[in-house]
Length: 91
Image (cartoon, rainbow, N blue to C red; front, top):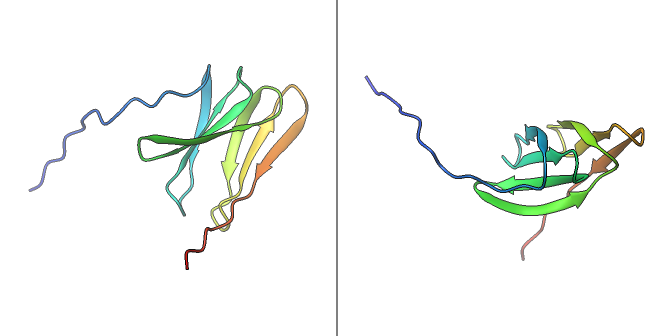
């Protein structure tokens, strides 16, 4: 029998007041909304990839598993921020 034990991996800093997060099943990136900073942070493994500006008070978040697009509902300006990503092709 194999026993697995949880262990601390890392603490990744994100902007003020992280609220919701989602994992992209295609890339395994994690996306976190920060409601009072009005941003979405992209994390890969234990590293912050980048931070994207969203609308005012981003709260809800979802990812389309077919194409990796990320949707963020912005509560106070009644909008949705949509982030679509393209693959880098290395030659």
